Length: 367
Length: 161
Image (cartoon, rainbow over all chains, first blue to last red; front, side):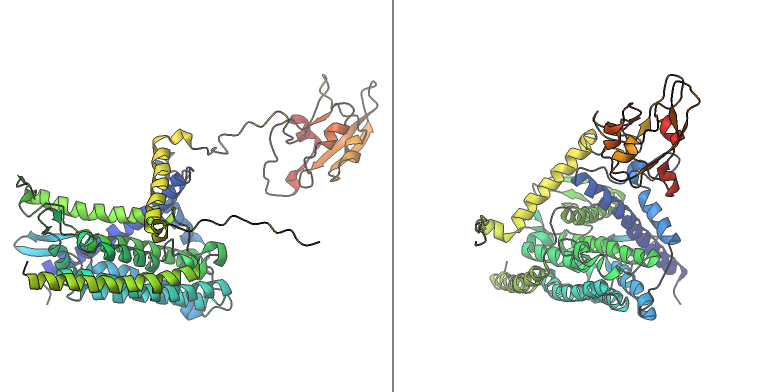
């Protein structure tokens, strides 16, 4: 039997992280629209108001959600009814599942019990992450095929080809990190990043694996179907791609899946390459700067700083998605494939080779 | 005759830095961030006009919605001569003439309908009018309506403008 305390903790953890991710998704839809507007010298959403307050258009996501709820939920005549209905679920479920292994903060000790701020600290950690996020392609392919319409089919085909080819580099680009930190458990990777590199730099993934970081970021954008790789829904040629035939809440499920992918992707980059919840030079007792200077910080302050640093990093990478989207035009399809197979794949293999070589030399050299 | 051939200047060969693409992306990101920050700091500089509340002032010669002029006593200035209806290339003006109650005026329009769905805003009716009874100087274009009937403007509405 599971003790009541543990059960309560588990439920609370799921609830809080779920609320965090979904809250961020809602905010991200607003950030996307407002950010796009400001980058393009427009004003963006500013109409939805409650009691005369617009709050910079913050109520637009609410209005959108309400609109989706009240729209007609139709199924096209010639669609495959079962798969058509299943596709949004297949899209949304893996997106939500991936957030389970992301550590939001260091383990906390409450009433003599250690609670890790992570829904599930799986020993396969990162493998689980890729296994589940790899399932996301099913939602897209099923949606494209079951709609029985040409544009969704093309979108589904494109995205299956794209997601599968970028999954290769996504997986390989992470190898370097696994080799450096000797762990696939995400919490251990984060712990490993708390050390210092050459006594100056924090030993973050981005400093030990700069190439791996660039490759991972690019592959992640392709994996999340975000610009410049948003071919599956390239609106100028495919109407809306794989979700053309979807309306109402089913469409919003695809939308949510995309944004959850973004948020979780941002959290994963922060975890793997930017130290997760590690705050630069912050140890358990307080700051310890390389010059020998140290500042004592109370335990609660350390906890807040660490969780805050994780949230800050996640927010930055969420913003980076938006920022990149409104900066770079979409790739042509053959360019995406060429980049994926001819550039990313060799580079990620090279990255593994060089990492292995350096690790071997360090090992032999004894430093 | 052969088809003329025009040589279009091809972009120069990309330099190594450009072909790496990453550096160029960072430059692009700097441009968009510049716009973003500028627009946040100088919100008023954004050229958007908040349309229904704020309206652009049209130039003086802008041909907008029609209006019919009135005499000093309030009667329409129009004498139902059909000049505008004849000049109209879109055939959107329908006039029914009647005998004017005013002894000094021969005719007046009983009906004067303009079908705004057909009007092409060419201004030929204004040019044709011998009494300056129809003008297009309201400075505003046709507001939307939810039925076709509402877009056929009748004499009462046209006189009020």
